[in-house]
Image 1 (cartoon, rainbow, N blue to C red):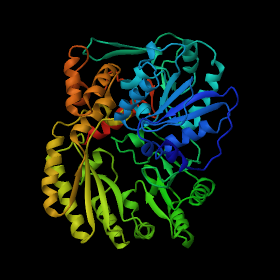
Image 2: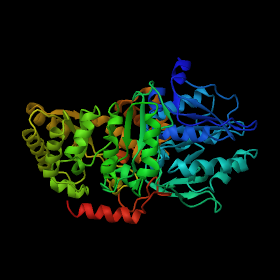
Image 3: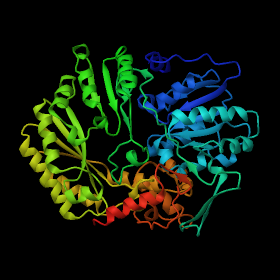
Image 4: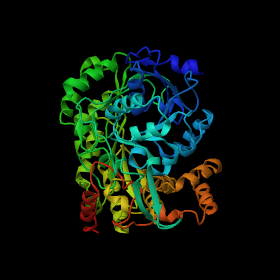
Length: 536
């Protein structure tokens, strides 16, 4: 099985031949190979390591692995989904490495991690990592390896203290967290001494050359797809949106220097192209990119776009996508309520949404999927009625177009203006209301699990005290009931679930990630929060 998986890979880079003293490294993705190899972030970090002659890297997934070094010095994990933490713990056990950083010795490898989950809020998982890389790997990884080489032969504490001096490298064990009491709020988060930086700042890669796939394989979850990052971050800054706020500023890949060369490189080995980014169609030269992809030499290419800004859905875009074997398009509207969209800073009007659907149909697409959300701070029942009305109007304007509303529950995310809000307890009822109203209209409604949203909120707002709970729940299962069982077992030793999930937090509160600096300071996030609440 392993041979077949790796044998199917077509590499778009040339791995280096490791030196005799290369650092033996394991780079893991805590999920199956098909999922991990479809992660552009994982691909880029793996290829970056593999192109270094001073590193000998082996890959590890939950279902397969390359030949692993007997005495690895570094073991890394890329974490893209919160609930994959379970597999991190299982893989550490497989490698016979103690789960907790504080009980590892000089003979154990350094465990490092990165990715969007850990950059946003690493604290629930901090006890399991020696090192966490906050931000973009393009500038973090090389600095990390070079600093490690300086202290490669030193004891573990010397290594960690040196690495903590590198911008963007967070060593959780060198920061002490105190609490008002076992079940109360955080009192303070401080470095253990004056030699350790008081805050760790997320590192931002600012080049106009962005990422593209380093491997194409039929064994990936998206078979044979070649991915090109068109933009990074999003200029819209919806106030709940981690993908925008955590990755600021908005950056665009150069069409001539980055995008076109990357596309040509990928389409030499596959006929499936994916354009990635939080707001792909807001690239300033997107029309020119569409013209390039509309050439007859690309007639065989299947094209998909990760996300589309609603008011950029033109007939031309729809025609290009339809011609390139795309049947539907996805846009995020959040709500049919103009008032609610103002609260979240969604610069969008209902007539633009309807026009996008009309353009999609006229251009030859068969369906359109809208992303919505319930439980948004400030939401009232009338806002749900507005969503129902909007969906009916879209259906009336586009007879025959397959219309889908995917709907999630608002989950607070670190480093966003809405990080201080809890999950709305009425959200589950509101999902059911929308389903009851829309299904009889022939509109497909796809709600995301409310219970899963509660677990996601727990992990996105959690602090270090959750590590004991996470160890328990991995044995109980991944249902909400399993988490509640673990909370019951740990009663009196940490706050209850509502403290993390449902409670609205004061802006004076010490947040679990207070010592970790995102792109915008807390004062700016509070101004954005005040702008939203003034509209309630």
